[in-house]
Image 1: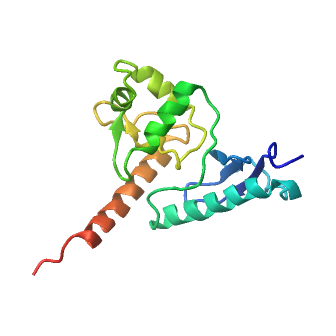
Image 2: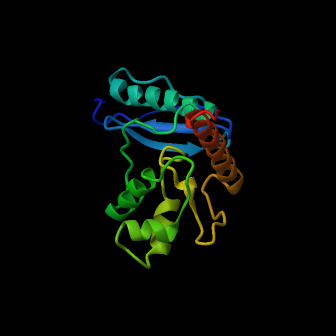
Length: 177
């Protein structure tokens, strides 16, 4: 197997439970909640050096995200999906840390007014949880709607980002005399 076809993976502990990370030679292809159904990660094949480097970076960045020291991920992504799904996922990546948008906002961003359900379906098929922040998408009335990792995880992620953003804002605000 050469590095062009190698998919390396590993399990990672997180405050939200176990995650499975998978990467190929182009970038990260999956971050998924596993609820402990994965065995430990296999040793990487010698030919998977590039894939493993993406996993290493994703692991470091996720650790920094969970400790509140990272707000924007840089790990290269290689999610597989339809052109529409990939466009939705790119729009999700543009949602600022600590912010929320409605499905209709994403549809408008894509020039697809009225495509809220299609956006919701693409959002639900996002293979790269947390890093592609589908948890930042809410209903039109601001209500939390479905999340592949479960609504408790979505609540946790949104609350975590709100706490980090509040601390970041406080640290960046000018001191009062």
